[in-house]
View 1: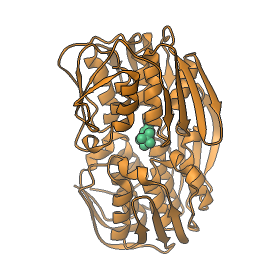
View 2 (view 1 turned 135 degrees about the vertical axis):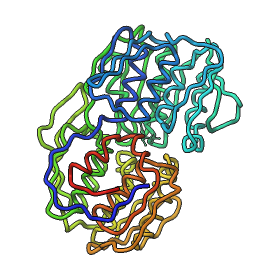
View 3 (view 1 turned 60 degrees about the vertical axis):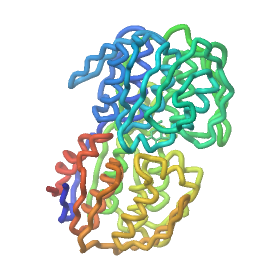
View 4 (view 1 turned 180 degrees about the horizontal axis):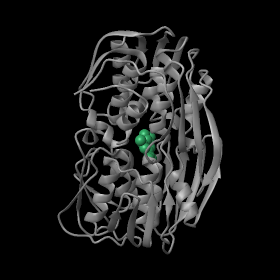
Length: 439
Ligand code: S3P
């Protein structure tokens, strides 16, 4: 149990956050399909990524994970050592659970895919349906949640797939499946994070992308082989977001977040907070293997204003809404976020749980399954007892609660603090560095 009963004092610090989760998982999965040794520096060492490495090891991939770097000895496309009675555990990770399926589409044996309690509640039909069309078998046939068995096929065929949710997991799942499909896979995808596209481009995988305002048309041909590749993984903007909002809401504070990935498909949180008056700046912007990076500078801002959030920003802020809601609670005026039912499909039903936490804090909230209105108050100060539990150990719910406690006050009791390890093992170390007190 974590207890916080003191607001954080003013701080002015330079901070490194952990490596990007989406890029780390993609690097691990794709380098397992390359030939030879690939090396990643600053790979995120969180539970989600460690589960990815464990799954690959079970498939016969050799991995060396040191303090400084991680090396994966790729076995080539579809080069896994398939065995009977194999079980792969995706832990808490939707990205891993969904993307690894597409590397197994030629498995001659049934492989059981399991996940933790939270992941076992999440919808998998969104990737099972297109994979079935490609020729992959799943058992039980009509199941849409884990645990599930996958059995591949020798007769994989490319499909014409339309991804309408703006889900990078669905898009990437079919992109990875194309490594094993003959002919051309055609994916019409609503805009979402494009890390897989960037890696494919760097690896010279035959791919064409036609971009229009809301959709990308992606055509991929299976490459003959993938060459090994090294990468330096930048800091995760989703993890940074917690410290951006902590700084905005605290008094007379400054933070410089070093070397953060600022891929435009991930910048919803910055655009939203800046529209609210955040004045967040990028310094020292640079290109790192096609992924843009920068140092992010933030200062306290006691004049945040509410936002009627354009739905076009939803996909690029999908993991940051909880912490954005907290900023909206201390902004002047009403904030309105709509078409966000996908939030309830995450590690926990985040729209439901987020509005519950705000209500517990005394914030006026109107929400339904698809939207939330937050009636902000710039003078919001918390003075009562607050308890956060039964949140399916959702790492981002935990971090949002910690930031609420440190920036707004009150006596907080928060269960399962270890859940930060899912995505951000250094979270509490950084809080300490900034002077935050917790027990
Ligand atoms: C992710 C995509 C998003 C995001 C998740 C990571 C990815 O999920 O919420 O944390 O790495 O592709 P959806 O694609 O389901 O929206």
